[in-house]
Length: 47
Image (cartoon, rainbow, N blue to C red; front, side, top):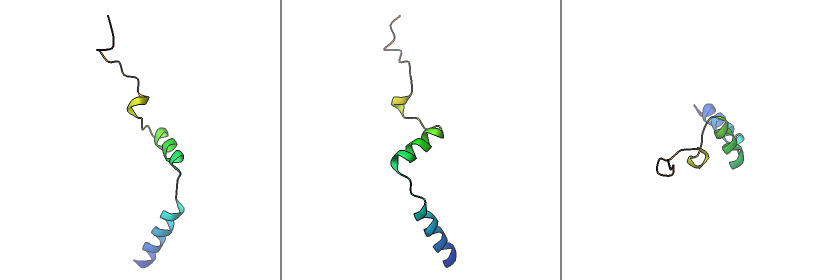
C-alpha cells in the first residue's frame, strides 16, 4: 500500500502541464468554448 502511494505521488508530480498544453490537449479532444462555436441566432438573422 505504501509503495503504491509513493509511486502515485511520484507519477503525479512528474506529469505537470502548462496551461497552454492543457488547452491544446482539450481542444484536440473536442472541447470547444461557446465563443469558438458558430451559432445562428434567429434574432440576429433578418429575412
